[in-house]
Each structure stands twice: as structure tokens, then as C-alpha cells.
Amino acid sequence: GINAANANGIIINMTQVKDMANASVRLRGLAINGLGTGINGINIIESGKVSIEDCVIDGFKSSGIYIGMGTVFVRNTTIRNNVTAGITVKTGAKAGLADVALVFNGVGISGTAKQVGPVYLYGNTTGDPP
Image (tube, rainbow, N blue to C red):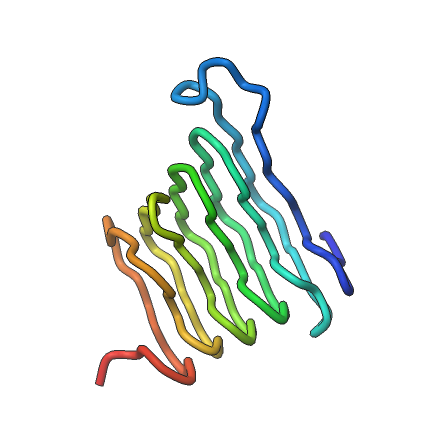
């Protein structure tokens, strides 16, 4: 696993890619732990396509996944115990979620994400369904 106290767990920043539409990053089978002091579990500053599968992201001060720019697909992943949000999707970024559990975060999803499969929201401070 990745322990990221006082830091981002993973940073993705594709600034020199000539064909951004075909540039891709795949993250699979990771446990990323902010130990309560980490910043973001996965900080996507700028990217083409990012796939996040079969991961656990836990214990960050900001977001489990922060998407500044790019297209991100998250599948079969648990994102929990993050102070600000489980997932933050900024304007212009895109996110698709399938079989994702967002639990015990400040808010499950900040911004707009497309639900393409089951998304479970539970125990978040705000934003859970009734």
C-alpha cells in the first residue's frame, strides 16, 4: 500500500502529452492511506483518461480522489474517511462511477459524476440520500 502522511498519495499531471485524448493512466489494486494528515489520495491535476479499479482510499484531509481536469472512471473502489469529499470533480472534468462505496466522508461527491453502476453513499456528513 501507499502511506501518504502530509502529502498526496498519487499525483497525475500530464502536461507534455501531444495527444491528450489518447493518453491514459491505469491504477489498480491499490490501498492508499493518508493516515489522517494526507492531502488527496489521488490528485489528478490534468490528464487524458484515468481508470481507477479495485482500490481503497482512506483518511485524507481533502479528497479521496480530486479531479481537476480529465476523464476518470472509478470501479469497484471504496473511498472513506476523507474530510472534504470522497470524490471532487471540478468544472470541465468528467467522472464515471460503478460499484463505488463513498462512506464516512465530508460529502460523498463534490461536483458532478455520472453513475454508470451502483454507487453507495453512507455515513457522509452531507449529501447522502434519505
